[in-house]
Length: 114
Length: 114
Image (cartoon, rainbow over all chains, first blue to last red; front, side, top):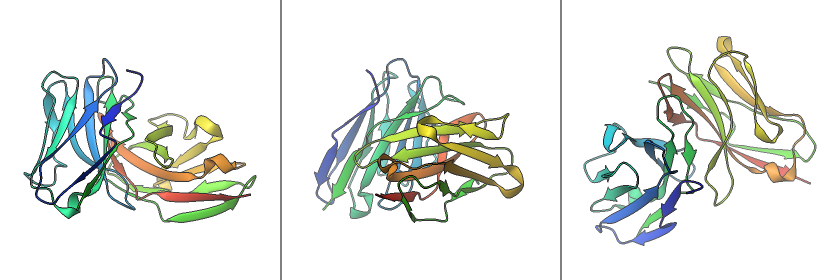
C-alpha cells in the first residue's frame, strides 16, 4: 500500500478484555516497529520485527503484551487482560530493511480501556 | 541508555515570526537525531534527520536543525512560521545500526497566532 495502515483507528474495550491491533506495513518493508504513545508523552518503543522474528522486544511492558508477524508482512499486537493504564495510542512503523533506514509511521490506533 | 529532553512543553509564536524548538540528548556516542511533527489525528511525519556530515541539516517545510556535539543539542529552527505549522514536534535519538528504534522526547506543542 501507499503507507502504513493501522486498524482499527479507535478501539474501546472493557477492563480485563483481550484486544488485537493490526498493522499493515508498506509493501516490501522487512522491518516493523510498534510504539506506544500515552497522553502528553512521546512515543515509546515496544518491539521490533525483522521479517517474521522479533529482533528486539525489550520495550514490551509485561507479559500481557505480545506481538506476531507470521508471514513477515502484517503484524498484530495483542494485549491480554487489559488495564486502564494500557489506554494510549499504539503506533506502528515500517522501514525498508531496518538498521539505519528511515521508518514511516501509521496514524495509530487509539485504545481506550474503560 | 539514551534519552531526549525537550524543555519547552508549549510555545506560542506569531505567524511570520522565527521559531526555535530546543532538544537535548544523552547518548554515549554520536547519535542519529531526528525531528518529527505530529498534527492532530495524523501520524508522525519526519521533518529531518542527522546521521553524519554537515551539522546543519535541511528538512521539509522550510525547517532546519543544527547538531552541536559540545552542547548535546539538536535544535529545530524555521525563519518564518506559517499558521499550518501548528502541531506537536518531537525530537528523537537512535543508535547507530538501529536508527529506527527511536527514543523520543516528550514533545513541544507549537501554537501559531495570526
